[in-house]
Each structure stands twice: as C-alpha cells, then as structure tokens.
Image 1 (cartoon, rainbow, N blue to C red):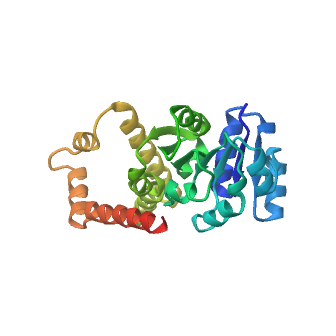
Image 2 (cartoon, rainbow, N blue to C red):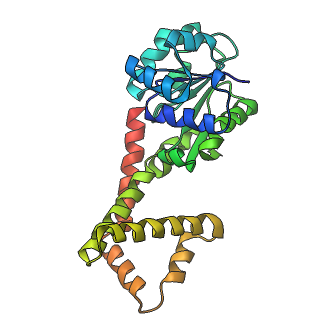
Image 3 (cartoon, one colour):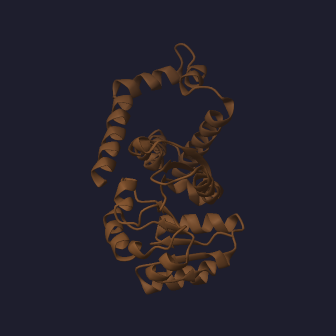
Length: 264
C-alpha cells in the first residue's frame, strides 16, 4: 500500500487524512508534518497517525501532499525537495501555485500533480479538480483520484483552468453560505423565528443542489419550472436581477480567479 505524507497538516490536510481513514487507508501508511508540536500531538491522538519531521516525510513517503500555505511552499521545497528519492509523487494543495513552482525546486523527473478541493470534503461532498504537471502519467492521476475520491467527486482539468476552478468550486462554498445566510436573515425580517428560517433555507439549498445533481437539467430549466407567470418566484427573481445578483457573481468569481493568479 502506498505511504502518504501530508506536509503541513492544517485544516485542509486534516480533511484529506480523515477522508483516507474513512476509506480504510491503513493508518500505518499515513503520516503528517505540522509546524506546532501541540498540533502534532492533537493529530496523533485523534487519528493514530505518525507525525514526523519534513525531512523524514520527504525521505519515506511515496506520495507527498503539500498542504502548507502557498507562501511557505517554495521554502519547504528548497529545504527538502532536492533530496527526494526517485519514484516519489508530489501533489500540491497550494491554492494558486502552478506546478512549475514545484518542478523548479525538485529533482528532474519528479511528477507533480496540482489539486484544488473544497471544504465540503468534511462531509464527503467535496469537488476536487486534478491537473497533471511535468512527468505525470495516467497511473499517477489515477492514484491521486483514489486518494481524493473518499472526499467526494473528482474531475481532471488542464492546469490552465485551475484558477477558474478555484473561483468556482474552491471558493464556491463561501458564496453559497452567504446566500443561505442572507435567506435566513430575510426570513427573520419577514417574521419567522431564526431557527425556523435556518431550517427552511438550509433544506431548500440541499434539495435544490440534489435536483441539480440528479435531474440532469440545466439550472435555467429548473428555475423556469418554479417560475409560474405572475407568481411569487418571478417577482423575487426580478428583484434579484434588478439588484445585480448575476453581475455580482460574475465580478466575484473574476476577482477570485485574479487573486488565484496573483498567488501563483
């Protein structure tokens, strides 16, 4: 079984570790590195995994999942990547960083895969986009899919599309949380108890997402099916359009895409 090390096991790295354990990945084949000793103790007690130094992880792991902050990745690679043994696979979880940042600091021939996932991994509903860097084979991509499949769905995309992926799905949960938050607040304004408004909005969002996933219909078709002529939904959607919700999303996703490029 492949040995996996999460380099920089913060929130995102922990999500990957917990997903692997849910999929019965042998705990003895998992290890993690952390910046703080107390964090290492916490992960060891919670999951029973080995917490090691970066040097040990780079020397022993078959797959290195780099989950440090993007600004810290170049230094980590410079410090430890040069001694990486042959046959290792490096997977970047660093938002915005192109695989070239890794390839420049790793020995020739080390395959690098770029991954963007999102926080619904916590409930097994992540959307993970996978892109091949240098020296990557179909076997490498299949292995990365196996690693991330327990977190939710996976898709392969060209690396040139990763900044757009970051804007749509990487940051996307925050947009939907904001929409639901606004619906709850509006429900309270209309006289509903906050808990009732919360339950109504959350279940509505869940049901709508399930319809989108399972019906095979496009969002516009599903919206039209709810919008009876002269009805309440048409009145509401008209106000959303008047207030520029669609334009706001265009601008928001473009800003996220641009920021991802800046990080790289």
